[in-house]
Length: 368
Image 1: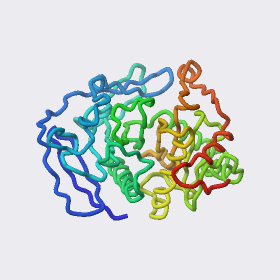
Image 2 (image 1 turned 135 degrees about the horizontal axis):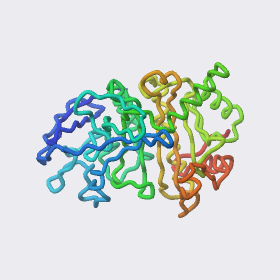
Image 3 (image 1 turned 120 degrees about the horizontal axis):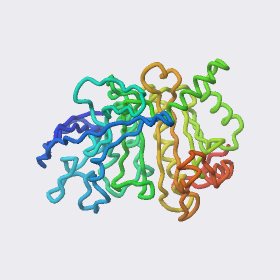
């Protein structure tokens, strides 16, 4: 898909990028006169579990559930000067005004893992606005818009991966106030971490161990097992397959994998990207159809990291909702929050069956 990118520097020095299908955008200046932020957080090493924790106290003051007429992600108007200083847009990406991670002031030195070790939280936090329609959802975006979002994800993954202080690029969307979303306008985020997040690292370690023992790639074999067995498959195309994991943590959780090995968004070919623009929104509509209402969800795109572990990484989506039934949340209580030991309230096979039959927007023609 051909697209056009236009850059703008906001009044406080942050970068904004327009992604358009047609050329000719003339960016309007940001007239808000914002001051550049002087806040910087840090990352701290939890020696007991071997994980990095980001500390960013300034985020306590971030925007919280504004009314639609003062939404900071809508196009600007005479009465509401927003983060996007234009009257309309297709897809926009800009540096978060209240970031957890910020580019380093000087050359970055990778943190060690000493006891009580701290380090600069070097990285990037970007906001991805999918549409200028405040009341839209990703599930109902026109196909051409979804294709444009995918191109924007590819572009930012490529650019952020060139930073020597970035180890991992994470593309995700939080949807719904039950998840903790503080701005309802349809948007996602991109975090570029100076470390490999702990869950991604566990994936990579498992893949490395499996390859050492078998000579094969763990994800290839997992996908092969699910596609051959079929009982947990939710949707499938020529290039992608979606299934409920055998050991799903959440009552309703789906992984979406490319059938050919792809390490990150930059490696998607045109056919894979084109089919993704169909199957991904359809998965979101399946989730909505579970209980005939918008359900909160997290859409987390796993990608290969930079560096030596890159050969073990693969691109795939982990999509899950915090609902276990109508008006019932799956709480992460003692076992999950304290011990990381999930207890699932719905069998993966039943969840897959419910998701296969949940489409209300387009006919469900898929059978396993």
